[in-house]
Image (cartoon, rainbow over all chains, first blue to last red; front, side, top):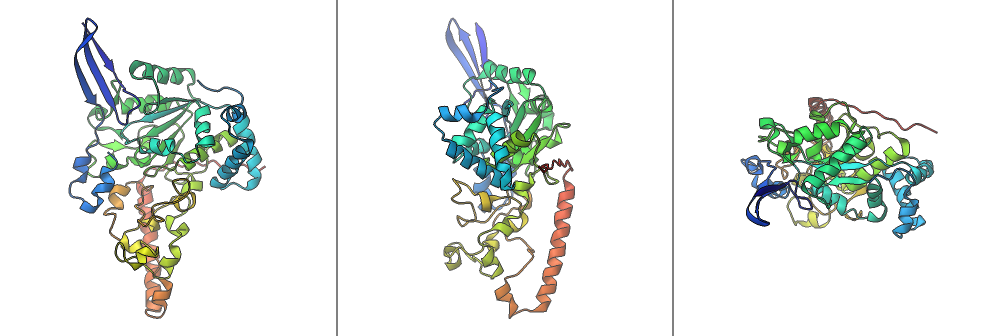
Length: 59
Length: 367
């Protein structure tokens, strides 16, 4: 039984880590993690709603 | 792998780029850099023969918007090749290897070309809680940028996030995000802010480096003067309408349809330094103001907080419409304008002071 991790996952937008449990050549369990957080929901609070599109475009 | 010797000439021929197109590109770059035309032969020679260092493109708290700007370079034939021949050894969004293999190609370059490779950084660096809000391969962005960036020949930040913290650093800055200059010291850092940066300016910076072996002169915010030396407002094609007092008052009104000035709709052009009106976007066809939307000031530090709400007009912009005010107001207003000018100057100076100074001054030597 072995556990493999692929980090970074490339050719995507954003940061992603994949971990997989391998048992006899079969993946028996897997986990994905987004390894970057900016808190745009928090940043948006209390702002002029007309500006929201410009902030959320950057996600 | 890095192209140690030999220049672009063969690569260009292989990819079917004509000599004529190459010379046109060199001429355009000479113009973007605001160099006298007599420098063009030097640009041509440098691009054809210079040794090109490897380039590592690092992404941290980013949206890949600058990568989009790069990949959608409207004149990719030569501009893309410059980056290609530069040997783009690491770029997560476009590279084939993943996981350990990706890390290996990164570290191979760092070790083999210590002090010689160039680093492009896209995205801010979170510093809160030990930097856990952005990790790659189990390492924090903070550790990575200090190790990889700290051993580079120079760092070019692309976009306002990498330059000054950008949107992750907007109030209340939940991750204590900062720009590269705040965490990497002792390496030349060229800032190309913008949301996103214009790939023409990135290419021009690299062409300048390959041609002169030096970085272009910058302002106190680390921005090259050729690209950030003049105000949007002063180069704006709608400036005549501002001077004439012809303003858009409401979206879709007659003034908007006629392409009048967007100042009253919240345009931040009078406070923003960038060459958008000249270089433009989408193959040089348009730019935000040209398309009928005000400038949001995206190349200025902390613009997410200082320039928003984006649709609120700037409180005191120097100058009133000449035609509209000449008859009506007279000298009283002129005095007011002078006052506004002075205030504006003070405000700008204070804002500039608030940022750490890291002036890189490299002048182009005369022949």
